[in-house]
Picture (cartoon, helix red, strand yellow):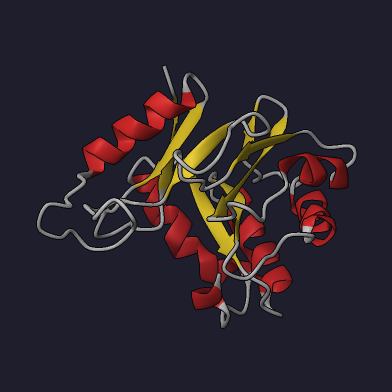
Length: 195
């Protein structure tokens, strides 16, 4: 959301959602830190998404959020999770994160959002996290890497396909969401039920 701080109304979000819908995209991840304009921009984004027939969900950026933030995050989820454009899996409010390992307490977050059930799909590295308290995992990598989120190096080349396969194997049947890298719609993600 940091790149969208200057939008003045829900109409300023329309072009993004219209383009996404015309390309067959169903939902947007709205990645947020702790910026003062988040509530205003989230309100605009949710309003525009509803008007344009697109779903959205919040992805909390743990470059900014820390352990113990569940109360504040829970209030944000409670505010937007009931909106018409909120992506839901069944009746559960879909929520994600960017990173968060060691900081995101899934059980505390679920407790902080009383009255709403969460479908929690954070960006955890499969080798670093247990998946007992979450519904799936979100892989932000849409490009080859060295296996540690850096550029490939001699002898350290991990393809996108290798990363996808690894996540799906580690999730053992839980949901897997991967970020796509498309020149026109680089902010769009898709959800895959792991098999």
